[in-house]
Image (cartoon, rainbow, N blue to C red; front, top):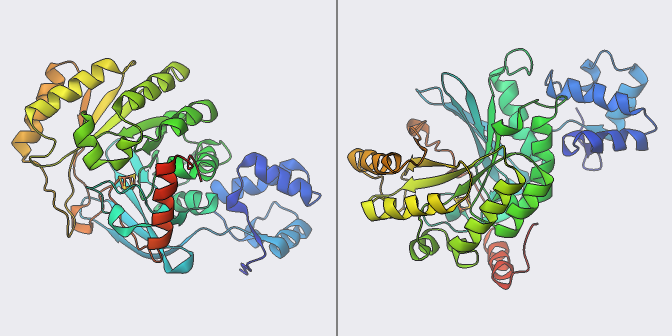
Length: 374
Ligand code: SF4
């Protein structure tokens, strides 16, 4: 299929966008929905095979647009069934997408940016620097590629039951493209996932949490990792700009606007850094102050080459969890998955070229407060 640069990638449109585009082509909106079903329900990207679409429309579409998911450069399955894809992006860059099967669900961890500028100290993506935002097509395309590979057919065989925006990048810094892609994940003509099964994870970009609460009803996860400002600023430098009190207030506003959802606070446990009883006490205090039925997801740190951090000992992790549970904090412990293919969701790497200048510019804007969303 010819995918010339001047053609339009249909994966860039949510349902309304696709209807508008078909209207521009002089076609009825229901034709857009017919094509959408082929793309997301049957995972078809060749107009020629869309057999209930008239031949003349198929030819017209092939002349001006295409269905272009990212190209899989490499994929690998771990012994535990975890599957990782390295997907090629423009400019020699690459991102990672990971599928984690469990007995009752299958979770796909999706990236939102090529690299990340937020520089969380324990994150292997941060060591890559930042290059650019992903387009809507590149975000929803990750789900498309994984679904095709796994034989996921919505309404028949659903291998992907949950999507977490927890791969490379800070999704709230790529707001419009992420929200459009999450809309396709939840649309009945798209992947048809329930809102509570699509989760956006943020390092705590306060103004954009507020915006998200008014524009999308997905589940929210916050990368917390410490419940005192000094330590959190060290681990998640964004905390300097949006400290815990502001983050808590934003979470309260989110819960007020979305009373049927709850927020998950992610807490990566690092040996001797944030895993001591005093840290658990601070986390308990934090959880009691945030309104709503929220929960903590404890994540044993996944070491990567060059990191100064280590995974906490299993007994320390268990004691930390017990301390939280005894205080009445709903606490889950994430099992480490895909260790043999280096596939920890939330700590993905990929390959980022040409990163230094953009990263420096981006950080400057962030410090000046002139960046909310890209
Ligand atoms: S943890 Fe998330 S926000 Fe922080 S550097 Fe890594 S990808 Fe970026």
